[in-house]
Image 1: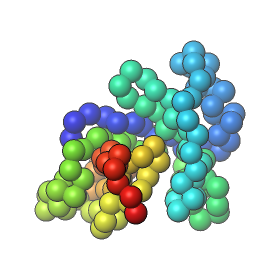
Image 2: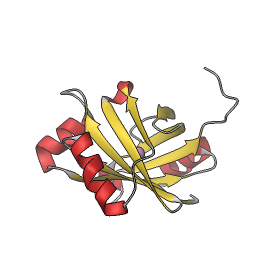
Image 3: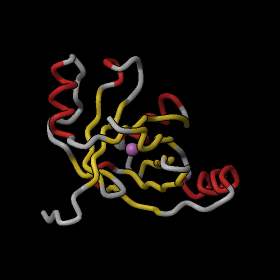
Amino acid sequence: MTKIEHIGIAVKDLSAANEVYRKLFGYEHYKTEEVASEGVMTSFFKCGENKIELLEGTTENSAITKFIEKRGEGMHHVAFAVDDIRSEMKRLEEEGFILLNKEPKRGADNKWVAFLHPKTANGVLVELCQDIDPGFTE
Ligand code: CO
């Protein structure tokens, strides 16, 4: 793992949260992106070389909607940058972490992502992310 890539924060209302974080940072988010497969709308703020990802659920079944119903708004996950997501997934599985997806999937902001179950990481949902190769096509 090379750095904290971003911290994910579950929010009820993305545009209201964008305004809160605009005031916090003193500048605007740099992108908004829907990840329809996950039922989320996201926005990203840069903070030095790290980022904050705000996530609003767009469906009743979205993990973000369920998270907020259970625990309210707040910190949802910590994402670490990795150079080779498949080898890290294999290594972490061998170390006893439970992977929530067996194959890397497409996440927001041009990343391959995989998640580790919070119960195997001291209550923290861990995301691994690797930049998608600019030459990659489906
Ligand atoms: Co994330």
